[in-house]
Amino acid sequence: MRKLFAFFMLLIGLGAMAAADAPAPEQLVRTTSKDVLEAIKKDNLQPTDKRFRDLVEAKVMPSFDFNRLTASAVGKSWRQATPEQQAALVREFRTLLLRTYSTAVGTNKLQDIDVKPVRMSPTDTEVTVRTEVKITGGQPFPIDYRLAKAGNDWKVFDVAVEGVSLVTNYRTSFNQTVQKDGINGLIKALADRNAAQPAKTGK
Image 1 (spheres, rainbow, N blue to C red):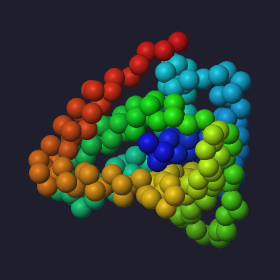
Image 2 (cartoon, one colour; image 1 turned 60 degrees about the vertical axis):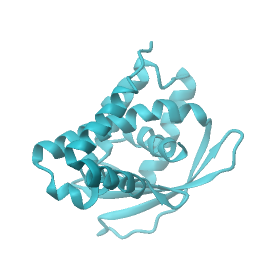
Image 3 (tube, one colour; image 1 turned 90 degrees about the horizontal axis):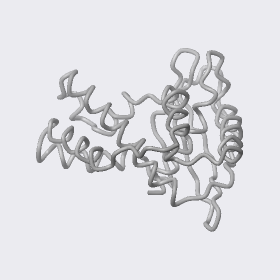
């Protein structure tokens, strides 16, 4: 649950600054985390609020490379999938992560995100941004964000919480499902999980 919470705290933090002239990854994480946290506190936004979901859909999702994220999570079986199956996997995995956040965010009370300095050269196309997340009533924990440059923007393609990669974590269970039921079986498994977690209506 903590891994999913951390993933989506980055997702919220990055989305508000997805612009044509994107700053360096470190500044992107630092500035947007501060801005969005202030907005959440000011409006007391909850994950079940419609405004919260609208914010995620409109401003956050463009900051993630869900094609690469899904392909990495599926692993070698991704190359065996048809374009239609790949599109279905991306769609269902994206929905799963978003809906699971509604539960995960309720178990953690975010205080602050301490973004560590990043050393990178102007020619780097991939970078890791390291941070420490502070929550109320709990011990701080590290999160590493992996971003790749796409044109003038930076896109998130993996998150590691306390050294454990989100992609690697899902890859294990995804591979087990594919070995047992095939690509269509994985698509169905994801769709069934999403159907069991319907998006809640909010204000």
